[in-house]
Figure 1 (cartoon, chains in turn purple, brown):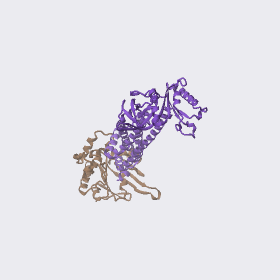
Figure 2 (cartoon, helix red, strand yellow; figure 1 turned 90 degrees about the vertical axis):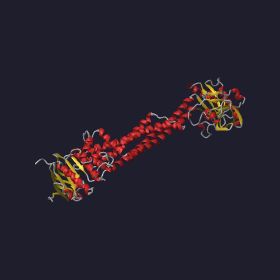
Figure 3 (tube, each protein chain N blue to C red; figure 1 turned 45 degrees about the vertical axis):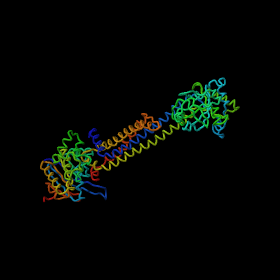
Figure 4 (spheres, rainbow over the protein chains, first blue to last red; figure 1 turned 120 degrees about the horizontal axis):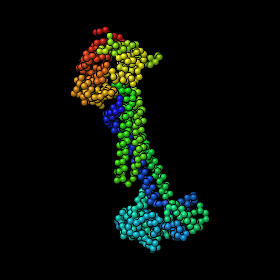
Length: 403
Length: 226
């Protein structure tokens, strides 16, 4: 039998058993679509983490008060009150720390901000005028409060873009924080990114005002410092460490009452979490692909049993075992490949539609597409071989009598 | 005398081994000349189906020689047997054995798929016309009566222009009117020069053949003309 006619026979077999063919194809379709889209979602979230790392830059260091990790028995970082505004002033002194170009203290409090009848619970950060530089952020409108404003305990607020739109507030609006009216002096440029906290949902106020109203006098949760470039971040670290050990009168550096971390190290942890999550999702999806494949094998087995008479008849009419084998293989492979292609199409559709209706990002890359379709085709062939080989070995007479 | 189409010499088919060995066909010899119409009668369990499988090259004998149209069949492998069945034998079964998903002409076309044949639709339609079903070419088997289905099966047996028509209880599933039609058709095919071997348990059906054999407990003997 020629290859072309074998194909024709196989395809006619598929057409003759429409429902069964559709069910098989669906099994593969969902398996393939699941693999591609879950890997795509994982990819998108790890891209987001990567872009945040890039946007943060590697020139930032965060100093947290309290115990260092090496303390072990002591409380976690930030649990003790060891940083002061004097530290901020010390670190800002360019003669002590020439590689530190920006220093911003930060106190974060989750509180409610009110604009007329609208209110929103957000993160209020008390900081200094150098907040923008230290955090590599910029303004979309208005201005940032100045060092003088900070010294005057000004009631000025700078809103993140999300907070501004949540509150329906803009530059010049009056908002109420902790029963105190603030004037919105600026709105931040959106920094995008989908990390674990939203950097656009924030209100920045002078640290002096913050200490008056929210956190208490002298409280400094952490200090963010920035070096001029990524190349000098190492010396900035050394200078900050040296200076703080000295001013805190600590001689043994392992007993330091503060810790300094590069911001990107938080994100590399986040990145490894994302990678693990992607792997987890992908393995669940791979299992669903396997189940789809077993479905194909199951259906091929049923097909062969159901069609034993047909096989007997075909053999009586002159089909060789190879003809029968090829016919069933082509049926199985066609169902798998068609299911695979439809699965890719479904995944692409999900990739287009998902960002429209949800906040979940999805990045479809060629590798999972190739792997999923390849696996689907292989599954169809491998799982098609066994029942097909069984079918081709049936004696025509045994098969014909099975009715 | 010309060379026989079927030349079976001392053929046996044994199932099982040793004490439980069962000789379904026991030391049978049979010669059929081209153009003959032969009936093999026998009750169920007499071994006539096993003999039919051997005659139809569906199964190899355990012992003995079988030459079909001069070809030594007993030593052929599955592939070679398939080729002999395809080129030289047309089968008609009791259960019709039509594929329900395919139209009449697609069913008739089946044996042509396993050989180098062009113009398959024309050949299939011509074969259907020769059994009086020219107007049923695109009907599914389920849309046809039992007699019509068996005529489609006969068309499928004829489409390859085989040396032998092997009919296994062709009227077993039909009412008497349809049975008569099918037997008339076999008689006409014989009159047109076809070689036919008919397997049946029914003496009346066997009476259309020119020679009759009786199968009993695996052994074959020629029946005296009634």
